[in-house]
Length: 102
Image (tube, rainbow, N blue to C red; front, side, top):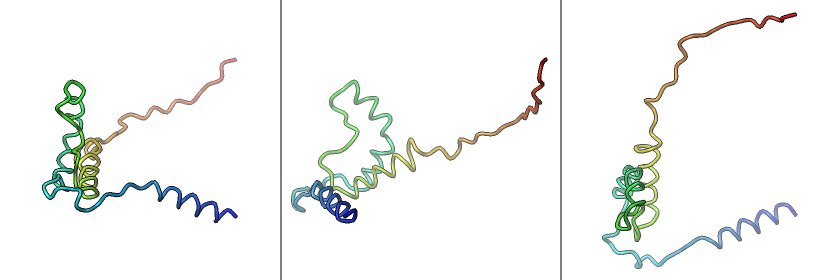
């Protein structure tokens, strides 16, 4: 019974997936490289988009999965999520034994 509920839930979620015709996207729509660039400049574009309607943080229409993948890589790997140089070190260790005060 549990497997049947899981399969029914998975099918219900799969039915919510958006689809579009392949010819609905123009050949000049933004692709992977522009998605990568838009993900990299996301923090700046987001701040500017708060003050003007002419700047958006995501290109619509785009060519779908490759744009999304580039956008994700731009944010996580090259943009905001890239924190490899941030190292936390501990310089001093203080070892103090607690004393009971009577």
